[in-house]
Image 1 (cartoon, rainbow, N blue to C red):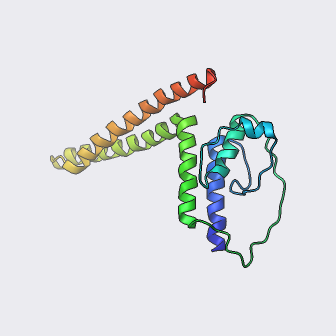
Image 2: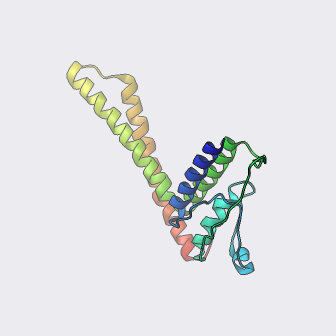
Image 3: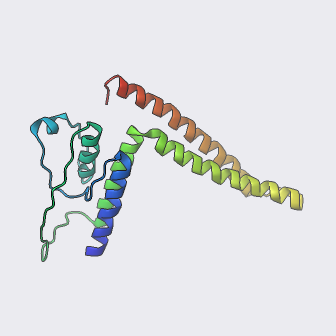
Amino acid sequence: SAASDVYKRQVLTRATNFSNGHKVTDSQSGFRCMTKKAALAMDLTEKGMGIESEMVLDASKLGLRIAEVPITCRYEGLDTSTMNPARHGTNVLASIIRVIRDEHPLLLFGVGGLIITIIGISAGLYSIYQFISFKSLPMLPSLVALLFIFLGLISIFSGIILNSISIRDRSHGKS
């Protein structure tokens, strides 16, 4: 439906904007215009619908100027979609997450690890409370606490290491 398509575009545009810091109003518009030099400078790898977001992300990373020009188009009576909207949105979101993973691993792994660690600490505090109050250690919350704290800390340290590698590669001119 038209309402779900608008919502999908907004979500994907926000995710694109979040991942690169450059603000565009519609990252999923297929209309692009660029110089030959800009096109050749981009290192595009997406083969599917995620290429729209990848172009914005790559242009931003390269420091290219991005300008938006208002356009109008009408789709009444046309079946414009070549892919299921849920599949399209999932593919584009996966593409954006890959870019965040590659360009800003500390953001992905560090924040995710922090959230997982906090959940583990919460389960651990619950286990300690249960033990103090009832002299019985609840097995499942205790195991969840250990697992989540361990996985969260591994994720945080992985993010720190991957971020260091990413910074080193960027400073040495590698992509």
